Image 1 (cartoon, rainbow, N blue to C red):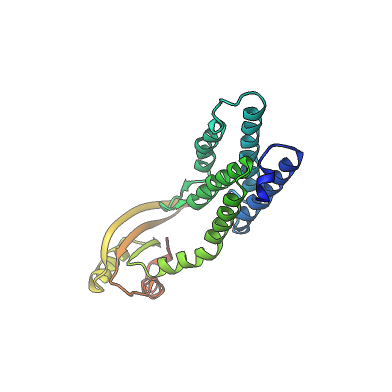
Image 2: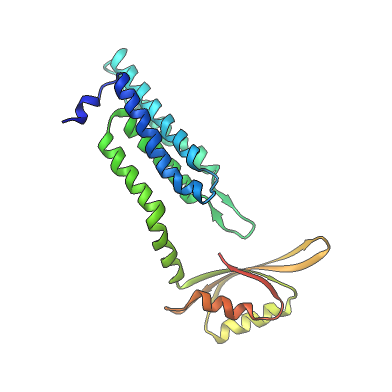
Length: 228
């Protein structure tokens, strides 16, 4: 009942909605900015604020000039248009890693939260904003745990020679690690040549990824190894 007083457009609701957009957008972007992702604290605040302003403008037009127009028209353009900004944060690295999906999803959700704030749906904006913050912070630990227990292990390695590749394949066969995909690249920089491998293994259940990395790192000829 109390929030129903802040549904219409006036100077007080404008100030409240702008404040909430900056607050919730900033909280969502805080985690991304702390981890030095492409879209951080300021980007999320701007996206949420922009979406809020669009929705307030839409409501203002609807209430001031016409009571028969579509009040969701401008908001629909934000939902679809934010995809272009999100796509700019998604990159595929040299090692075939896809980066920026969580950032892009967070930007899209921040825009949706801004739309909810802009139209006066404060309850939904506050609950959704809090949920997004929990997902990006506390649920990240669960994500890391699930990756560490996965039966699929993807490795990136730098090797000095091709003989090491053959030894690795034999080692994985002995351990009964199934190779589901292997991509080999020849690299050269400053006159130095080496071989890069992106390898995907299918592991038995309960295998420790760190232990496998330590075993593989002991091979002669491997100069660098990491889990992707």
